[in-house]
Length: 406
Image 1 (cartoon, rainbow, N blue to C red):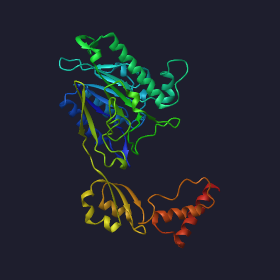
Image 2 (cartoon, helix red, strand yellow):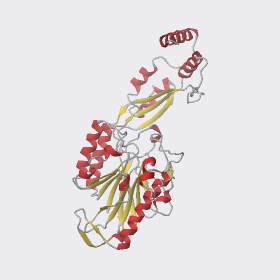
Image 3 (cartoon, one colour):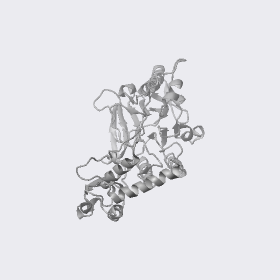
Image 4 (cartoon, rainbow, N blue to C red):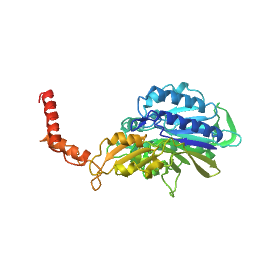
């Protein structure tokens, strides 16, 4: 039994203004080829398929074409993430072609999808846990009239209780698993079935990146890995860095597939990949398959003359975060950097010896707007405004206040 685990495609996302859809399409071409060549029984997609609840038309078309291609030769189990609209992503799930399982409804939690009924592969039970919005799930998953506690730990714990209860029923009755067409195969006891949970959550022990959307509710967003006890493999989505969660601990193998593309400079050093999961006897084998890299991310720092020199030739075509350290902001800075670095995404002027972040934070009360403007000029340019510049700032401020009737 071989499965392919992927997650966090974020179709429709941009990176500092650069449209990533072309590169996302290249990854999905790679994924389809990988699934075909590796002869996987199913592709598991652990949520955040889209980047936002109402995705662009091109992203919807790309997903539709990819799922059609995959289901021509394998099965797909896909859950919604916190970026997805569960309703939109799951629309039409009941009439989709055989082999495509879109699970976005909380009410489906605890219902297994049976895979791998063949002469040379044992049964596999896949339990999809779409992203559990706490305010919705705490009522749906409650056993009594009172809703669950308002936390991710409470709703994920209740979801896994349903999974374990279903497993206990199946194993207790000693029944036989059923194939895709609903036919039983003798000798395939559900007691021997491999078990997989797909979940979209922030599990304790995982390392976050800057590009994940906060899912904190009531101050609690992290769920303990112990909640997932009782299964063989947990295919996680939400965190963008590929990683093992509970390395060395007793319990199931738990992995975040990670996003296939870097979605922020905090992911600069990550090796993006998909996960091939092999069940051989009692062992769970893992192989990471690197994803194609459209363009590396890099950071460069120096004076403008240093940046324009030959020492940065090797990264000139990368997506770049550029920090300029001249004491004063150089003339025509952006134009000169554009000619040097065609794919520059971020530019910061931070004079050497100063803090890298702006000293100007949120201000509840501002007594002197002129002082704030002068502070910004000093930060952006590295030196305080001179008399002529202060006069220009004053004229602009006066014109703005007059226009607003202040």
